[in-house]
Length: 411
Image 1 (tube, rainbow, N blue to C red):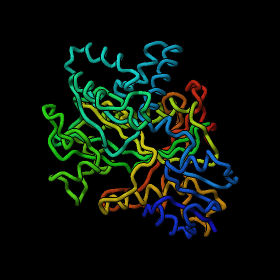
Image 2: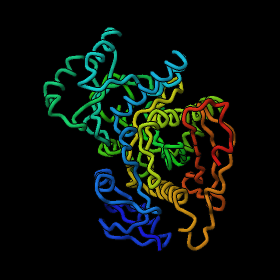
Image 3: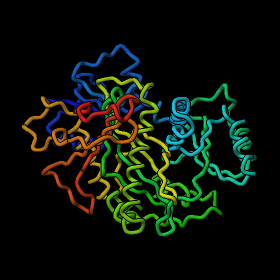
């Protein structure tokens, strides 16, 4: 019998595993087949004498933080841009313009001040703690004095840890609005290997909306500017029935009607490119352990010109559910993740759906990547417009030219 252990009681994980007939072990039991570990417990697994067996799986890569910590993600993307510029010039580096201009404080304070003054001090910037989530500690600034005020109230650099450092990013002042409200996308991305890079993108993401009309006049109003559900659900205008969310499918239908099919298709292709490039930027430095897989929560912002911007990548995207549609969506995402990471010998009884067998190559994506589509035959889930899972695999070779990539490379 397949066994698993889970840090905490994540209902959608437990229900999915139990439905497969897997046995739940007590926390700390090392005889697991799959360990759904919290990030804080990774040091116990990878930094101790514990040795994983050949068939054991764990849901994080050892140094995933190279992708999921805001300051390290920024550093890795900047390094990737420099390498691209060295090899292909400014045009190649411009292709990697996927992150708003960002500086790590306090280390890059002088560079930030230079960028701030370059536009006459008229810009708006957003400050975020490098190690926090759910919108905690985020605020907007439009004066250098606000940064000095933050710096004076913080610990000196020598006494800071990662969670007390900040990044400051150029604020996207012209986001695409729907009914006058700001939104971003939460996309679920499963990585099963970094070397070679093998990535699955779920079609079951959603858009998260602010509850208050967008304006640049109220920089201190978090209900205007921050889309995090943890923040928005505390507001008076929060709708607990739909959770101020649209499914990705419904958003796409809206965009096709308002922006046109061609523009919408390009936007979603650009989003896939942003995901691929961010992973390639970290590919060389993330340890690709064969025991590991990881479900990431990608947050993407779309501006009024339909350009997608990477905001951050979450190592442990929330699987808590606030609505019935939310529960169905996240349950399905986890179910498809388990289908992909489960070895054939764990399939008892014989599965009615084999996600892996339905991946067929359909030509190269941008920058040495192949894209395939998976259809969960016989598993159509059309409740509340959620649709069926149609994962997408972005299996990228290690920075080889596109012309060298063949479909057979990713069989």
